[in-house]
Structure formats: structure tokens, C-alpha cells
Image (tube, rainbow, N blue to C red):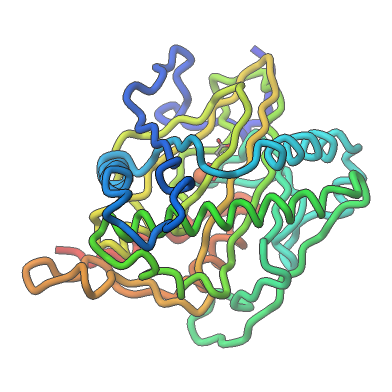
Length: 337
Ligand SMILES: O=C(O)CCC(=O)C(=O)O
Ligand SMILES: [Fe+2]
């Protein structure tokens, strides 16, 4: 066993099992009925089966794999290539685009999840330039700030390839959002307005080989706080999802019908791993609360409303280092029974 910095060591109950089980029955959804249809989401009758599959997967898992999703393989290949090239840069080159308290976008290798350091390095960029978010998470502060991406000099093509990939992901995200909305019995575009000034973010992840994969995690257990996350990964493996959990953001909109799944990333001592999550997030001014159509007198709202931007700003600025307090969670807004 190698010696690793204690900052990476998970408490015993959160350490990964090295004799992990390969997920059985994870929903696999073929999007071709939607991709190949000329009517798209406008004729729900024609894609009824698909809508049901999405609804079932959201309800039972909060997680599913999609195939025939319409994102060109070429886009995926290109981003994978530049992602590797970027992380091969010497550290001083990567630090030129380092994320800090002023700009939370760019390169970072000290992220903490639940106050334990993750065995990874990341590069973050937003898909809208600039992206507007609150200047602070303080409730009374109405000032906003404009985030701008920091692009590295090497590889110089990174920016163009990332922007092209972002465009493809955005199209897919709206399709999935539409399917989710239809599966809740709502119009396909019910949630679209919330994303007009989206604060969506793409992350390039690199998990180097780890000498102690039994003690550390690539990403500690967490739930993504946005509307949905679309993840592309290589063939190394390591993502683990908890089958049913107490969920996050979509759950709030759907008043707990759909739940965000708890997940984490295990690392291994032999192979490095690369992944690219796209976090589909609404505009900073969006007030998140259970959608009226999904609440009734018998099934009243289970969450207090909250401002997405404040939540986002809080999360972005509290995972830079180890803190003595826990960072904000959607469950903090749950109305107790
Ligand atoms: O790399 C992965 O498989 C997932 C990463 C993740 O969960 C995250 O960045 O939120
Ligand atoms: Fe995640």
C-alpha cells in the first residue's frame, strides 16, 4: 500500500469496496425513436414507450444509460483527445488557468467532496459566455457577477472543441428534459424557460492512478445539485451509484417523484480514467420549488423554495478546501413533516 496524503483518506464507512458488484439492471434507454422522428417531442403519442422508460428510470433509479442519443461520435472523440493533452501539460502550465475564489472556472486539483480531498484534477468551463451568477451566496446581496472561461494556451484547439461539444450536449439535455417533463404528465417544454440563461457547466475530469484505491475516492459520495447531469466516460470504470436515495433538485421540482441519485467515483492503482460530465443548470434567478401542477392539497409541497443562483454560488465556493462546516444540500430545504 502506498502512502498518501491523509487529506485524501475517507472515513472507514465511506471507503470503496474493492470487490465491488457490477450494476445489474441499470436502465438502458435507446433514444432513436426520438432522434429519428421528424416530429421530435411535439407528438408524445409516437414516443410513448420511450417516455415511459424515462419516467420509470427516473423514479426507480435517478440514473440511466442512453444509446443512439444523436451526439456525433466525432465530437466525443475530439474532446477525449484534447482532454488528455490538456492534463499532460506541466503543472505550471495548468496553474495558469487555475480556479480560485474570484473565478471558480478553470483548472483545479484540490477539490473536496464532503470535506475529504478527491483523487482527481479537473478543468471547468461554462457553456454560456459570460455566465451570470450571484456575487455571493448571502441572501440580501443582489449583486451579480459575470463569469468568464479561462482557456489554456495548450492545446490551443481546446476551446473550439469544448464549445462544439457543449452545443451537442445542450441539444441532448433539452431532449432529455422534454422527455422527463412529458413523463411527469407535463408539456414537453414546461421547464425550458428556466434554462434561458442557464448556468450549465462542463467538467473535464482526470483521475490518475492511485496507490491506495482502498482508502481514497476519485469523487466522494454526493448528489449533483442541478437539473440533470449527462456523463461521458472512457472504458476504465469507477462510477458507483447508490440504488435509490433521498435525492436533490429534480426531486424538488417533481415534489419528490424523481430523485437525484447518490454516487461516487472509485479509483484504481493501474489505469488513469477520464470523464466529462455536463451539468445542466437553470438561470441564476430561477426560484426552485415544486411545480404547482404536481402538488395538491393531499400532496402539498415537500420543499421550501430557494434561489438556484445562491445555492450554486454557495456550492461553487465551498468545495475549494476543507471546511469545518457541511456545504449546502437540497435536503436543507425540505419541509419537515
Ligand atoms: O467521473 C465520473 O464518473 C462522475 C463525476 C461526478 O460525479 C461529478 O463530477 O459530479
Ligand atoms: Fe456527480
